[in-house]
Image (cartoon, rainbow, N blue to C red):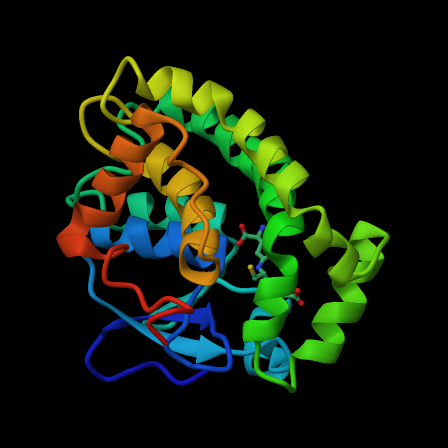
Length: 238
Ligand SMILES: N[C@@H](CCC(=O)N[C@@H](CS)C(=O)NCC(=O)O)C(=O)O
């Protein structure tokens, strides 16, 4: 790992065949969090077969944040790192007591929401990957889901219903308050918006249009931070 001379933070970010297409839900969490803290970042496109480029972290997943001499991996650890090392910038959690609660939301997104969305879009994601990533992706995801990518794609309508049902508690909360974190967005919102950016940039169908509160909130999240989510390259714009 070589630290940049200008102190810009770097983020290894999963990319598709088009290096500008960025869809990882975990990387999106970190990108929202960095924007929330007003920190500049240079994102480095990374592909699944490039595990050796992350060898300096001792693991093979993104996001990986490089801040000077420090490297941090895992989106949750990165969020904690950013608040600890940049305490003078806007906080990601509000009160310290909120951290364990937001951690529960993080675990829900990792273990319930993201697998449900993955089943819905995994074939599309495969098709958007660099060809050198596709065999590994197909093999690992078919093993994970116990069926072929094509079979999952055929169940799209049913799976859309599963995702919408998973989002019910989020929709209920957003019908009564502007953001998950309260009056303004914070890391709780970055987690769920990160998950929703994944289909938003890879698939043509909406996961929120059935619900007015979800639609309002996801519009606001994509327009937040200087339209970070809104200006993302999508599979149709790529
Ligand atoms: N718990 C990790 C999960 C990170 C993760 O799974 N990243 C995916 C990209 S979305 C990855 O790097 N996968 C590598 C692989 O499948 O080999 C986090 O929150 O950062």
